[in-house]
Structure formats: structure tokens, C-alpha cells
Length: 465
Image (cartoon, rainbow, N blue to C red; front, side, top):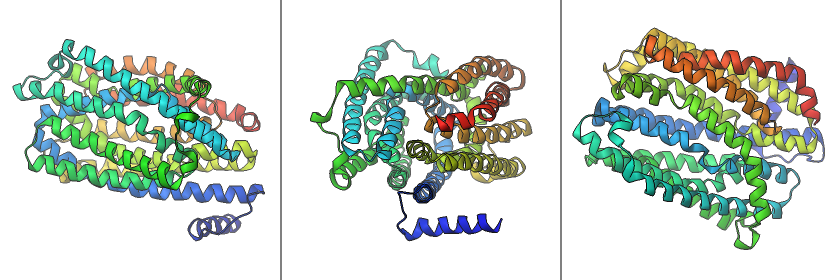
């Protein structure tokens, strides 16, 4: 125990001292990997804290400003955009993994080629989405889609979706810089820019509410501010600090684009299945119970979602770290890190969720007033789900770093087929809490158990591969 404590302290001191290590040895590479993971996790926690602060301030303001129906419509719009997160065709995740492996070989020309080809491919995807949306827009009944009835909500639905889709499309190629930063194990740089994005978003939202702006302007404040910061990040990172990795027209290669698309196909399928399964709660609730019922679910879900979000950003730097460790054949570090991350993620989520179950009604009342009184069944369901989700994310980082994606896709499709049906059934039977209980039941039975079996049987063989 003393030896482990001293090892941890030495790693912490190395993180903040910047002391050079011997990268030719497995121990030295492990320490440098640990330093970058911790730096990324700390800055990510700081960035998320600012995002949480912005959420804590903006949610009650927007809820009271928009009212239950318009706020529920806004949450449903956000869910629709979240489902479209797969629109990059998996290129973003494929780019992250490819950059991480190229970084392990210290191959800067390859990183430039990857960034250039990815930016070209993603720009084409963004243009395609905008063309398709423009063609379909006149034929979509936004009133029926969001199940709203007030004249103001009906009038704002279409324009607000236009703003969200345009910002979302432009954000697809803008995300290249963040993927490259994370692949280089420099996620802490992206996190610092995220701090600026949170501050700018909150400021924009406060201004929009103060000016009594309509929902489309509020959507622009939420979606446009991060897009502006991403553009600034791109200009500085590729134009000043890492010019050797900057995209260039001459570096675009059709073969690289195809390779990124090919490697991203499985990530794409995984994204689609996960988004449909776990981002569809608000849509199902709106269709089965009405848009106003979404608010009853969305507010406590946001509170519990902070737990999963903090843990997810803390372990996200492990993905490129695992990939680089595979290139270096540092199997001992891989297995030790997986065990520790899995234990810490689930233990932390369980502790935090228990506290929120007990204090949830009081916190929500303090947060937004007496508008909502969540049921114990909903709070328990959210607590169980966030604990299970935290453990699943820890395992997913290892599997992504090891490029074991096909197994995840099979498990995800099986889970989704059961979860969607179960959500509809349980929402009809027990109300809004049925959505989250359906997620927990389906994941525990059809995802957690197969992942446990896979790790027990194939962990050593996968690391050696």
C-alpha cells in the first residue's frame, strides 16, 4: 500500500512539475502518459465545472422564461440534434484513433495528412446536410413533430430548428482541431478553449433573455457561441502553435479520406445506435405524454447527468493514451489502468448518485423553485443508470483504444432493440421514469454482462494483439 501511495504521489508531482522522463523506457512512457491524462482530466473537470455553472444558471432562467411547453420543445430539439451527432460518418472518431497511433510513431506528416483529409471530408458532409435540410424544410410539420399547441411555440419551432441545424453542420468540420488535440494527448488545450466557450455561451444566453429574445435567438446563443470559439481554437492551434499539423490542400489524399471513412463506419454505427437508444427519451416522452411532460424528466436528468458527464470527461483522455500504449507495447500499464479506471468510475458514480437520490428533491426545489417534485422512482432510476453508464464508459475507452469496435456494435444493437420497445412500454405504464428504467434494465442484461465476459476472457489476448 505504501509503495502504491508513493508511486501515485510521484506521478502527481511529475504532472505539475513538468520534470522530464525517459521516454525510451516503459516506466518513463507510462509516467508521461499519466501526466497528460491527469492534465487533461483536471482541465476537463475545470471546463465542465464552468459548463455546470452555466447550466445551473441558464436552466431555471430559460425554464421560467420559455415556460413548460416551449422549454419542453427546446429539450426535444436538443435531443433531435443529439441524435444527429453521427452525421460525421464516424470520421471524427476514426481521426482521433489514427492521430493517436501516428503520434505514437511521432509521424507529423501523417498527422497533417489525416487532419487535411478529415477536414475536407467533413466539410463535404456539412454542405450535404445543409442541402438536404433546405430541401425538406418546407414539407415538415414542426407543430406535429414537437406536439405543441400555443401560437408562439408553433411560430418559433421551425426557425429555431434552422439555427440549430446550421450551427450543428458548421460544427462538424470545426471539430477537427479538437480531435487532433485529443489524439495528440493534448486534450487539456481543447478543454481550456471549452472554458471560453462556456463563458461566452452563458453571457450570450443572459443577453438574449434580458432582451426578451425569441427562441431562435436563444438557440443561436446556445449553439453559435461554441462554434465561434471552435473557429478561434482552429486558427490558433493550426496557425500558430502546431503549424506542422495544420490542414493543407496539398496534403489531402483521397486514399486517406477513404481510410478514415472506412475506419469510421463501425464508430458511426455505434454512435447511431447509442444516440437513438439513450437520446430518445425526450422524444418518446413527448410523443406518448406530451411536450410538457418532457420538463418533468429533463430537469432531474440534467442534475444526474452532471455525474456521468464529469466522469466521462475525466476518463476520455484514456482513449488516445491506450492507443499510444498499444503502439509502445506497454501491456502492464494498459491492464493496470483499465482496472483502476473501472473501479474508480463506478464507485464515484454510485456515491454521487446516492447523494443525489437523497438530496434530489431539495436540490431541485432550491434550483428552480417548486415547479417540479420528482418521484422517488425517477430518482432511483437515474441513480442506477448513471452508475452503470459510468462503468460502461470506462470499458469503452479501453475498447476504443484497442480498436475493438465491432464487439461494441453487436452489443449496442442488441441492447437498443430491447431498450426502445421497453421505453415505450414503461413510459405508458409508469410515466416519465419508465424511460430511464428501460435503459438500465436493457444495458445491465444485454451490454454489461457481455462486456464482463469479454474482459474476463479476452483482456490479455486483446492487449497483446
